[in-house]
Image (tube, rainbow, N blue to C red; front, side, top):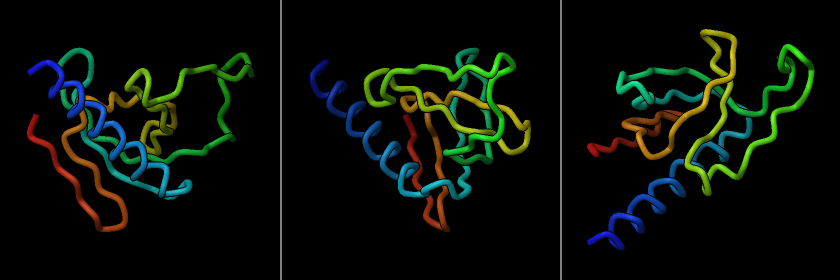
Length: 102
C-alpha cells in the first residue's frame, strides 16, 4: 500500500510540475493547502526575475520533483510563494482545469 501511495504522489508531482512548466511564464491559478492547513488560492506565474530577494542574492532550491515544492511568483501579493505539489487541490491553466480530492 505504501508503494502505491509513493507512486501516486510522484505521478501527481510530475503532472503538476509539467503543466506549470508548459505555461512558459504565462499566468495560472492554483489552490493548495498551506503548511498551517489553510487553503491558499494563488494567481501566479513562473520565470519572474524582476523581484529578487531583499539582499539581491538568488535563492538556491532543490528540484521541485525531489522536494515537492515549486516556487512561483504570486501576482496578487507581488511576492514569491512556495507551492506544495503534494497538497494541490486545483490548478487552472489556459482554460484547462485539473482537480484532486486528496
